[in-house]
Length: 341
Image (cartoon, rainbow, N blue to C red):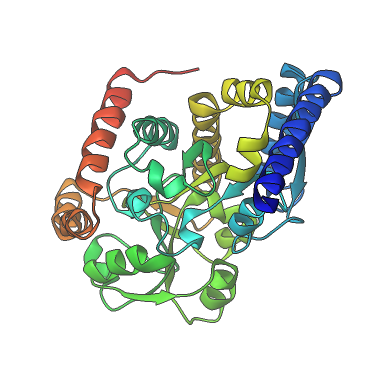
């Protein structure tokens, strides 16, 4: 009898809180904490601030975001902090949650994505099909994005992949290490914050990294040759804790849906494409720097060397075949039509 009374009381309290929350949303708007791991003042921090400003103008009487940079979690803790309601919304890197996002990791494989904008849209559409929705059970996605692919950057001249043999190359993650190994070089797994010092001190001869990381980590000061192989990329997403999401009034969820999804995913991917293209152009004009495109023969050799990685990933990851097939359909259609906003 006491248990029944307790359940009734809890249900009544939950209903009362839901009504109160709905009333608050109508009167003043719900304010949600949006946590990023971006350094304040960085290009991505400014991008998020601009997006939040636009978001807050959409329906300020219903919901607003308040952005927090590098204060409500770091890359290792932001997922748990969003899940546990330290923050309501977060910018999350799946690569930092080992074993959780197995089907989502395909962007780290080589030669799948060249354009982050289209890749981001395609990932979102595959997610909408439910093909890896199970990986977002704790912190559902409201937007996803890819990064432009990494390229081979060195402090020594490179004309062909043969010049990489025996060289020590800094990498991030097991996929990056395997790519470098297959190209005949020696992968050295170190943290991104240690790339500059490791290159400067001669501990490594280069790094597999995207142009997007150059200015934040000053890599243009130590890497002069940029051999443009597609060495795989990475991805991230904007997530809301499930407990937070399910407690939000319907009108709040509606506004978030309208302002995020494919629209926000495209904007994020397009932003990173712009950063990569701008950095590539600027770095390529710096004294002593050289951007090298592989010959057709080299490109074919690289494709043959790296192709088994995708087959291996599909074989080892349940559901991966359906994911990659759906992604290729979506990405291929976008490349063919080249939609631009």
